[in-house]
Image 1 (cartoon, helix red, strand yellow):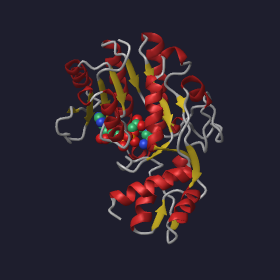
Image 2: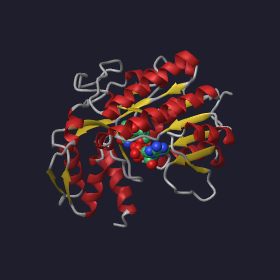
Image 3: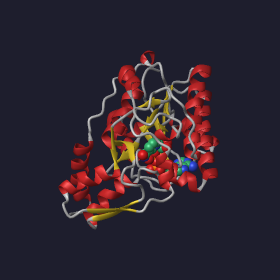
Length: 316
Ligand SMILES: NC(=O)c1ccc[n+]([C@@H]2O[C@H](COP(=O)([O-])OP(=O)(O)OC[C@H]3O[C@@H](n4cnc5c(N)ncnc54)[C@H](O)[C@@H]3O)[C@@H](O)[C@H]2O)c1
């Protein structure tokens, strides 16, 4: 088997999955991409299964039934939701991931994608230009599950020859599906509020600077890594990938240039502590060297595109 032929996506109804699935279907064939999620939302004639990733038996059954060779494992509990319910975050993120890796091992799957996050870093990690190989001492349950995911995926690669790959996504900004309970959600909400109400109250402080990425770059990175020749990879499950970095006030200013009436104020909540433990910017030279990564969008081009897409979506 030398390419992805039958693909299963877990967490397919989430922010990333809901844009990844149509892209994969276009590239690999409508009927060759099986979307799954706990959400009960059928998709017409497209293959869809309700699947809780904590149910390893059902996962194995779906993999058998469709002859799956590749999994994009997008199901997870994100950082902010994870801090509200750490036990659930552990169950889904660690238990679900273990089930995916085990099914990969048992059925000798071709390739598996498991996303990590900038949440794998912690306060002791260098904040600016965070290196590829560095201190991983996260303080959130979400971050802890992501470090476990990176290490476990790498273990299955060395121990069982299972081709597991992953990137540390930064905060993902998109115009289609709302984000699912992360600390960078403000960078999507702000656009909706700017267009609808001309004002936004940020749950992070003005100077909080975080690594971010526009959805087209997120999808590009995901597919580029999954299509890269295995022999080129020195890292596997933990690639740093950078898109752009900005502070809340820099984003607000960029929106104000395009919507002059826009006003922002600040009421930091529990998510501030999470954001404070994460890096400001990321060194992604390993991804650039090993699989040719480079992003297409910077802050101004992302803001232009978001406003254009959301104006259409909101009928403005
Ligand atoms: N969006 C980001 O900014 C970001 C940043 C870093 C990493 N990531 C990672 O990327 C992946 C996808 O993230 P996303 O933003 O699409 O998340 P999301 O929260 O938008 O979507 C996750 C999906 O998983 C589903 N899900 C939850 N529990 C499940 C379970 N037990 N079984 C099956 N499905 C379940 C949810 O219904 C949801 O549709 C996750 O691993 C996440 O940690 C995302």
